[in-house]
Structure formats: structure tokens, C-alpha cells
Length: 202
Image (spheres, rainbow, N blue to C red):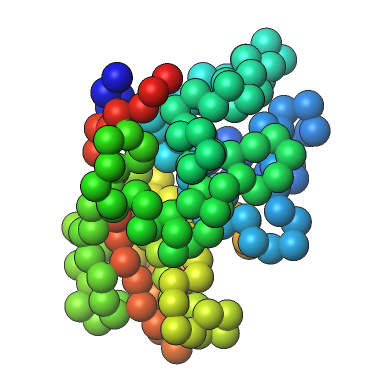
């Protein structure tokens, strides 16, 4: 069945779970990697939510229902793209490059995205970014030869300072994209992908 990518749901999820450790344990859903490798796990969760995997709400009944949806892999792809209550999920779910390659690849089912931009900050047009986009960064101090960080866009804008993002590792809630663009020696390059309607088995 085909499912619409609803960025409003993705944004609501991102804002609710960006500052994960401020939530009591009973409200948490997915596994969080406290070792600092949780950025793509979190972005996959936001994409999953936008495709309808998540039922909005933080009350006990809704949290329990969402945990069941995770266990049943609603809006996930079994053995390929899935998150978990107990670990970071599949490689295509929790690793930066694998998530990108899988999302933009042609396939019968699973998250479907296309690249909007790839390059340096100098040639980047902030107004091309929309809510619900995923931005990946090359981090020279971490992985200088490949993409190593992932952000979820929660607000569009005409400048990097106006664009807001949520991410994990380190946790940020509606932080300006300029926190990264102002440090081009560290965050040397970016790419932006946009998700669209996609097929999922359930």
C-alpha cells in the first residue's frame, strides 16, 4: 500500500523526542545510543513517523500502542530498514551512508527519497530546503572522507539561521542550521534529501 510522507508528523515526532533524556522512561520509545552514534537512528525515526508509523501522543495508552507498532514493524521493512526498542536497528536504519543509499535507491517498498543538493555551504541555497527534509553532513573531526551526521528539518527559512533542525548526538531541539554552516572547517559539506510517498507492506 502507498503511504503519504506527512512532514507535519515527522516534525511533531522530532520535537517531542529530540531531547530524549528529558522524557521519563515510561514515555520513551526507541533505543537511544548513549555512546554518541544516534543521529541517523533518530532521523529514521522521524521519517518512520512521517510515513505514519507513529501515532501522535504521549499518554500511556498511545505510548503502549506505538511500542506495539515498532515490534510489529509498521512502516518498516523487515530485515532491511527497521528500528527497535532494544538496539539501534538495522544498518540502513542507523548508519548515515547506508540510510542515504537505501532511501534514494529504486525499490518496490521502503522509504523513498531524492537528492535536493550536495556540495559546500557557499553554493547552498537555504530557501531550497523544506520541512521534513533530511540533511547529512561531512564532519572533518569525525569522518572527513564520508558523511557522518544527520539532521531533521523542522522549519524552513530564507537563511541558515532561519532554518531549524532537530537531531541526536548531540541532542538539539529546533536549533538553527547556522550552528553547522558557521563552522565550515568542521562541517565541510552537506547533502539534502527529500522524501516522497512510498510503498510499505504494513
